Length: 171
Image (cartoon, rainbow, N blue to C red; front, side, top):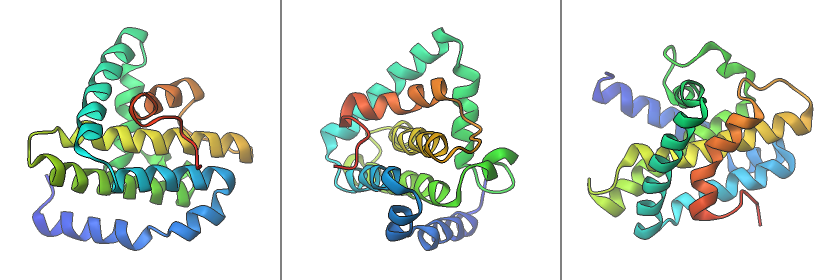
């Protein structure tokens, strides 16, 4: 487990890497959708956080029944700090990685502010990061490059977000 100082440094790095305009320009139409997820997390209200927590657990249970549970857990390991994250993280473009990390950080902070420990932070964080990770798969498909997460898994990862917050659009 990282020390308090290591965690603070990691969070500071995530904040430095987040560049809203960079994501918008570097990720084309998908960038607007990623930014929309981050914006929605930032303005999320308590009922949404509670619903995301529930949707995450329901989806995780259903994913286990579908046989994608191991891949589901591996996908969320992309949020781990270096060197614990999977090596294929670098197959994901840097703008998507920045959006993924920042969405998770904002989700943790917002969930704590809304729930003071009464709402599960990890499920809400995973709902937000799952949505951005699913969008990064869309970006890879659009740009014609490899992504370590396949389309079927991406649908599972984005499902809790879509169920509660609506489609992954940039409108």
